[in-house]
Length: 199
Image (cartoon, rainbow, N blue to C red; front, side, top):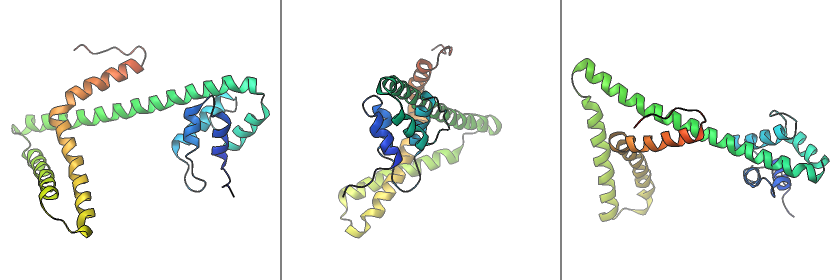
């Protein structure tokens, strides 16, 4: 017997032809547990275009969809899809803003430290070298040392942690300017009337 589809999945089935992005998100909502924020955003976009407001619950949205003629729903589904995609893009842009602010704050901290003390922050470089050397050593161990199978999970976890730190170090010391330039262009192209900085 087929599993009963939940309310979110039923809404996704109804809009799938004209709002595939919304349908794809709603199809992934589990029957039990916390509803992902993206799914709530998709329902809010549908509620807004259907005239129910962004606080409409899924039951109201589904009932409205079932009561409206197809000729009206097609356009509203397309509008809801566009609203949802814009909301996702705005979220991505906000995350980029936060990331750029974090990088800027880290560099300003280093600059201020050097102004006050007249010296570079030695701890920053020591920690960076420890992570880099540790990351490279783990790779060498994995390549040339026979590791017992019951210990590989620990080694992979260590590699993942050191690998994440290694990438942050590369970004901080070498990759920030180029990536920041690309992200600034993305934000500029996505936000009307934002003055672009001279390069």
